Length: 388
Image (tube, rainbow, N blue to C red):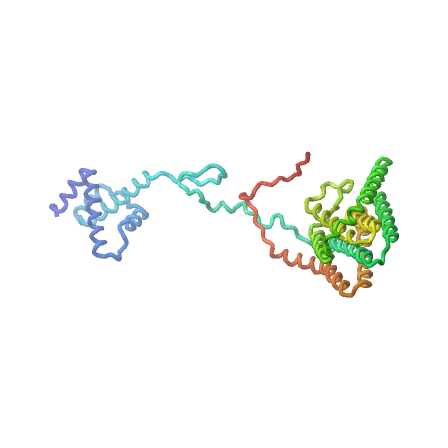
């Protein structure tokens, strides 16, 4: 027993040789066991398991002497466990600390992380459906009345064109209609004006005079504008321009900037206005006389230019008056369209039902499926208007 314990006493007196010997013996023994039993876990796994366990307490001199005399193998196993623990602690002390990832927009790559690295804090600031507006069905239906109103106005213009081309309206009837519309629109505009003065009234009168004079002197040119174009091409082009006019029209405002309005007409509304004017000139070029051309062009420009302005002023003054005017206009339009043709009456009725009933209901239903996400990755938006 003394011969067996003498090597351990020698190695224990020299700490560096003692640790090197047991580390070498441990590695040889582990590799031999791995080669003979490939199904066993590898040495790194064994070392991690041993290092993760609570290290054995250091032996007192009496316990170490008793362990040498009783069982050298037990002392050998204890020394292996102690050496593995020391090796793991040295490795932990030598490994650098991993820096924490920070969310920076233009800081470049952070050491230890990929350029596209994200952690669990990346989606903390995500907001879902932040700008989604909860709509009320009744409010949407009331707002859609403005669309139906302008559709009826365009339908009335087409009716006047049709009756003029059929010679049902002569030039005197058209001139009387122009005077009535101009007087009624000017009267409504004056009643709803917030600030009215003599200078403002005089400026409006001068603008209307120059407008009418310019249309009258250009009537001979409009009369012969499309003489070399076939009538079928004129009808097809006019229909396409009117459809474009309805799609691009600004139903929430006015084509002409009203007094007190905050925003100017948009680019699409200007395109819509130009399309309606070209359609009016195409129809006017098919009339028999220059006075016919002047009367129909003046009528069309009054409606397409000033009807949205008058409607905007009425809505701004009283919403109930706006609803009463719109429903009365719808009833009159449906009556005159029914007198013209029954199929057109059905088509216009279907459009009005879709705009006022089916469209708002459809919009409310599909609002449930709207899903929008916002977060720090979005572009910055100004919360105020920049005005010169």
